[in-house]
Amino acid sequence: MKIAMNVTRDYLGGITISNVNLLNFLHGKGRGVLGIELIGQRQVSGAIAFRHLSPDWFEHQIINIHDMPIMKKIVTSGNVKDLERKYRPIIKIIKSILKKGKPDVVLLNGTYYMPWLISIAANELKIPIVLRYAGVLTKETEHMKPKARKIFNQMEKSFMNRVDAFIFPSNLCKDVVEKEIYKKSVKRAFVIPNPINIPYSEAVSRTVERRVAAIGRWDYVKNFGDFFKIHSILKKQKWVHSASFVTGSAKIKKMPPSINRVAQMSSEGIVEFYKTQGLVICPSIFETFGNVPMEAASLGVPVLVNENVGCAEILKMSGLERMVMPFDDLKAVAERVKELCGQYILPKQLNNLRRYLNKKIINEQIVAVLKEAVDLGK
Image (cartoon, rainbow, N blue to C red; front, top):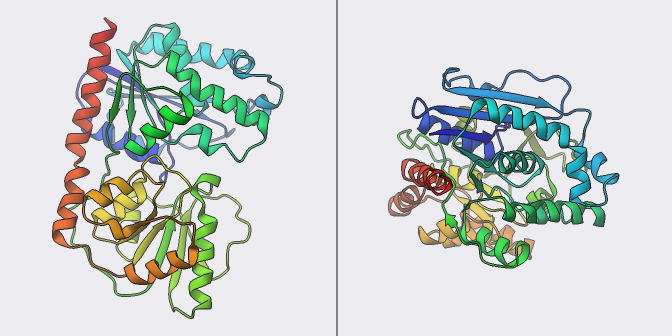
């Protein structure tokens, strides 16, 4: 079996983490993987994330669309069909890549415009498609202007007509997509959590210092403004601590100067960073899963996540329900931060968590869905 998938290179991105995990699991097996990446920069260096993969097995195709920014195209489009016509030259390029690569199945990650474009190309070539949800596009764009919201909603809904099977990283994600996006049940739906790539064998050196951190891209749905507010509440209460925010190069307004801004790191670097923290906070308004808190918790580092984050299900099932709460009362959240910071995760709880996140089992389940899609497409 040969797989085509959309790939990204952002160290902090859940799609990159999940894809690299799956690629490492598959490396050397089958007929290989065709990775398709769409970039908006005029110039970009080679992707470090895939350098360890054999070039005879992993083919990386990069399409540059710096002259076709999505938001500018939406401004001049009346609906998603108009937008599709504007991107037809890119769809043709993707089709030529797929024709040459001859994948048996396409694995789409997320519902943003890159997987949307690939889904159109693959559907026209009658290649089976499996969509693995990574963020709910309609919810991630609900802060935008009405026209953009409408088109992105149409974009997400259009997948239903082309996708052969859906993989949801949590029941929360599945329920929201079925009830709020498609307004009906998805027939071929599988709930499979995101795998994480953390070396469990490493000794976890817990810190008793009051260090709290948030990690991720600066985006509306990630809601890191609440992390800033929690930090400010703790300072006013004279609860001595240090706070760090690991993120990309985005411009951030109104970040308290007392918060340490940390540049995004390699996977090895972020593991070492987790291990120096007393608590990792995930304040997202909504998140389909939440790789960051799962990575931290699997190392024995306590986390605190908003109840609207998909991985809250796994924390609760592992006996870590105190690490989940609504973020509607930030003073109450600040009190929970003080309770959890530096707390140990008990061995039984840690073992439960790691069983749910067993990357071998998760990747086996994903491959089984892909194989089934290929068989049904014959």
